[in-house]
Length: 178
Image (cartoon, rainbow, N blue to C red; front, top):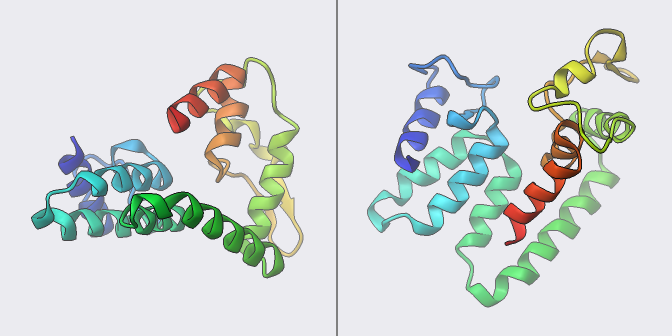
């Protein structure tokens, strides 16, 4: 399954998707439908990749254009005892930089997260309904950018909570930390 996902990501990046699943702009989504989720899968696959296939697996990761997954890929190749410190340092540096130098993309994300936090509920809005939550007049208005109707939250934890409620949040947390 991993090799099929990598191949699909590479085909999507070359605009030759045989299934019509993506890409999302210039970003490969694999079978996951999200470049972030595809990138996370690539990081896991990279850690178990046979040496001869590392370039193909790395190319699949690069095709997702997911910065967080790229950092995860770098951390995956660090010595095991360095990983917790590397993750904390990367998180701190990323947050510090983003908040002190927000690009248009980050300003949009901050606005989406603020609006999404108002839609948190016990049961959620339903799987794959994040875009419906912000459609039409409920879109996020960004100064200098106009109205944005986001397809997803740009934050897996927040999206799981909004669309799947407490059960989705608990499930994602268990998946990430168990």
